[in-house]
Amino acid sequence: MAAGKEIRTQIASIKSTQKITSAMEMVAASKMKKAQNRMLASRPYSEKISKVIGHLAYAHSEFKHPYMKEGSDLKRVGIIIISSDRGLCGGLNTNLFRSVLKQVADYQAKGVEVEICTIGKKATSFFKNSGLAIKSVLIDLGDTPHFDDLLGTVKVMLDAYDEGEIQQLSVAYNKFENTMTQTPTVTQLVPMVAGEVDGMDHHWDYIYEPDAEEALSALLVRYIEALVYQGLVENIACEQSSRMISMKSATDNAGDMVKDLELVYNKARQAAITQEISEIVSGAAAV
Amino acid sequence: MPTIQVDVVSATESLYSGEANCVFAPASTGELGIYPKHVALLSTLKPGEVRVETEKGVESIYVSGGIVEVQPDVVTIFSDTAIRAHDLDESKALEAKQRAEEAMANSDNGHDVVTTQAALAEAMAQLQMISKMRGKKI
Image 1: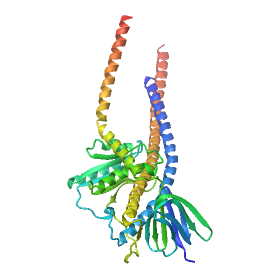
Image 2: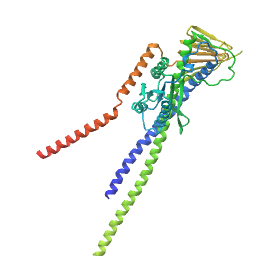
Image 3: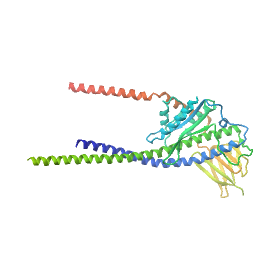
Image 4: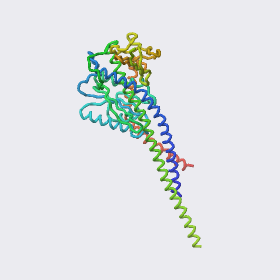
């Protein structure tokens, strides 16, 4: 029964792992609901501000803000990469990093340098050995990120754009489609790509207060921050749902393994008993 | 009476959305009264009270600065959730940069693990040796 004891300890250890994964699944499920609510709550802001940016593209303003002008030829680009702080959430971060690396390779093939800004521990530890210059880092955001946490990080990248260090800025995050599907997405922030708005073709312009430059700067910076914030809250919702799914499958797999091992254990036990009986019987026959 | 669609949003929630007779907002150059068919306008806001006058009564919302966009039939007010000041933003940016430098400086973490493991193995071997020798002596 030596093998039997080994199998029993194996079963016990798998069961305790299963307990942990199922607990993590339940925690992720409850956090996912909160994260989704936060994501939905922040949507009106980013939708409304996108709409205003759409209007702005049609306004015949004399002043063109640098964020709205298509810049000169690309030499360096910046990418803000949003990841989770913690692991055990399936292939969520890996998928995102893979699509970012593909994009980086595309840029580098064209002779364009890339510098990055990482949000979340996973991105920071992944990209610090990638040879790309990290301009700013934001970690330990927790499950409820605050808008002000982002300001500094985004400002570093926007300052680089203002000084002409980079000619383009994008953000990479996981877009929340539904609980089962998360899509790695890379969106260009500046120069801005405005959406189409109907019925805005006539000649008009805003009255700007205090002046065009100040009002536009304030609006555009908030727009960019809103997009990054939206990316961040979506990524957190993705993280929780992805963790829930992967922990669920881990729990199921552990169940299967326990079942298989129990079968093996019972077979071994039965074999041992049969052997013992046959030994006794043959011993009795010999006497 | 003509009405105007008013939306007051902050990054974390929608504060007000509905039709109104008129809106008052604390623009940075002075209080702004907006009635339907107002000319298109874009202005920054200073901290203060946004008053939305509807048929049912007056709704009052506090904003800590932000932006107001006026189109002839829509007013959108973006309220800031963060306290913003140039110096504050600057110091936050510096912090973010510092973290980046730290992360880059620690980029040989992989080696650290290896060297620590080697040191640990050595220490273990030494301990084993010591306990063996003690055993012999006793």
